[in-house]
Each structure stands twice: as C-alpha cells, then as structure tokens.
Length: 253
Length: 215
Image (cartoon, rainbow over the protein chains, first blue to last red):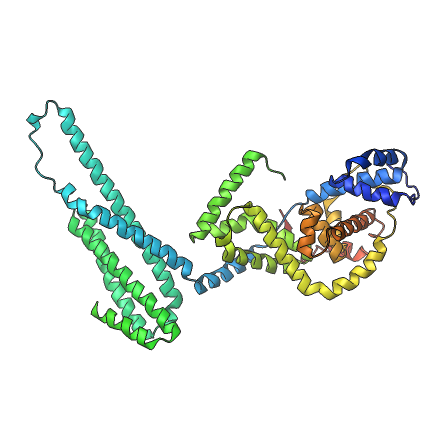
C-alpha cells in the first residue's frame, strides 16, 4: 500500500505525463524523466497504479440487458414503419415475380417434349445395355431438373403473392368497402383454382395441363393483386380518372 | 472482451448475413440483429444518459435509424463499429438537446473542483476495482466529464474522434478526460461516498430502481 504523502507542486506536470503513459501517447523522449520521477515520488506512483486499474476496469465494464418490453415496443414501431414504406416489399415482390416468370418460360417449352418423347430407337441397335440405360438416366435427370425449376418458380410466385398481399393489406383501407369485398371474392375464386390445380398435380404429377393451370392461376392472382395495389395508390392520391381506368381493366379481366 | 481473429472473421460473416437478410425483409432477421447488438447499444445509451427510461427510448430510436439506413451500410466498417457510431451520435444529440443549458452551468462549478491537485492515498491495493463502485462513480460525474470518460476509456474512441463527436478541440477532450479520471479517483477512494454519494448508495441498497439488468 502506498503511503499518503503531500502532493509535490511539480507533480502536476508529471500527472499529465502519467495520463499520457497510461493512454500509450507519452512521447518517447519523456519516458526516462517520468520513470525517474516515479521512482522517487510515491504519490505519482500511486496515480500511475490507479489509472492503470481504472482503465482496465473501465474497458471491462459489462453490458446491460434491456427489458423484454423494449423489443416489444420497438417491433411495434418497426411494424408501423414497414407499413408506411411498402417499397421494400414491393421491390422484393418484383424480383420474385421476374424470377418466377423467367423460370416458367425457360422450362415450359421443354416439358411436353421431355414427358412425351419421340419413340426410342430399338434396344437391339445398341451394342450393350449401358448406353440405353444412360439415355434413360439422362431423361430422368432432365425431368427432375424441370420439376425442380417448376417447384422454384412456384415458390417465387408464392413469395411474390405474399409480398403483394402484404402491400394490399397495409393499404386496403384506401379502397371502397364494396370494391374491397368484390376483389376479395375474385381472389377467392382464383385461390380455389390454385388449390384444385395443386390437387391435380398431386394425383397426376406428370400432367402438363395441371401444371399449366396452376401457373395460369398464379399469374391471374398476381395480376389482380398488382391491379389492386395500383388502385390503392391512385385512390390515396385522389386520382379518380386513374382509378376509373384501372377499374375498367379489372371488369374486363 | 476482445475477440481472437477467427472469432472476428466469423462475427463479420455472421454480420454480413444478418444485414443481407434484413435487407431482404426476411422475418426474424431484424430481431436477430437486435438480439446481437441491442445490449451493446442500450448500454451506451444507459451510461451516456444515466437513465434506464431514456436509454430504452434511445435504443428504439437507434434501431429505427438502423432500419432506415441499412441500405446505406456499405460494409466499409464493421457492422458493430457502424452501429456503435450511430449509437454514440444518437446519444449525443439527445443529451445536447436535453441537458445543454443545465450541463454548461454544472461544468463551470466542476471545472474549479477538478483543478485541485490529485491527492495521494490508499487505492484499494489488494482488490480489483469494484465495477459497481465504478458505475456509481461514473454516474456522479458532471455530464461533460462523464461523456469524455465513457467515450475514451469505456467505448475506446480517440481524442480526435471525441472532439469531432462533441464539437470540441482535441485538447479539450484530453482535459475533460484528465479531470474525469481525477474526480473518479477521488470518488473511488471513498472521500465522497460518505457525503455527496450517500443518496446513490441508499438507492442502490433499496434495489436500484430504474437500473437495468446486467448481462
């Protein structure tokens, strides 16, 4: 334990140097002078030890955990923020839609050909069973590949629809209640078509008709939701002419 | 606690993944970000304001800003560093707006007190510095001292960074830190715990109302 001694008036200057040393900013030329002073001054030695302990303790202070209610309140505020800024959802939705459309176009042309191939050459023409097995394996792999692409396209459609539904939900209050009810009814009809197509695919996995029906229903749902979002936007702006134009298009579809 | 390099790389990878998921609007991603950094940011706010209620409001404000600005995060600095800066700036804006005038008046008095020469004496030589004592002593510092001490010794900012953040000269930051440490040293020696600090101790004994939980 350092013995308490009266502070030397000269210690004021050395105290500043002690702070610098603890912070690692002491000029090299002053080190020897400070060391010499510390050897003969218990008060400054005590200061040096104290500041080292203080810095270490300060750097090791633990964090506090906020109460659970803080996240609850924050998540509520975030929900409000997200509802007020549907742009992010919309951007993600567009990406999902673009990916879905690309995948469907890329694979749909080959589906019929793969599932209904031209008659295979006579097996006897092959010198052994290996090449024929190879052809069969290759075709199966291709079918699996197409199925996988269609599954991914389906996922993208579902994601895009979820995004659009979120936008519609956040802005539904801008719509006339009767119109909103009609839109919901139409969406219900499309949902029914989607469900039936999925059921058909389950029982007939190779049915191109069921696959085509499913994607057609998904496309219809996307189109209706997109029109609804556009309608919400023009209603919010009070653009009656724009709203009438969209409604005209909706009645024709 | 300092991370070893492999931990840091792993943390950086995890941070990038969280940012990516947040930007895509994946459910639960932002909550994960909050769980990862909420305590750190809350602690900055709590120590800077000295109030659990203010810290709770501030940490929400910080994360709302994070949500709004996440698209502008380019990854040039580590996510933790970016969030830390945002937290400190949010806290400084808050204390400037709330305590400006009162703080300036207090500082004038405290500047005079801190000019006293540091007294030598026993410094808990056989035991580590008690962190609860340190927290209490920090809370008793005048706001400008507390900010300089917290930013430098606790949060690890350099004096030029503190100068920029507080709008003061680098030399002023050094001077405030010097005075803060001098005052802390005096407080931790127990000289003021018997007098001015009694209410703080009484509050601590009564269950420290308003004090947040520790991790």
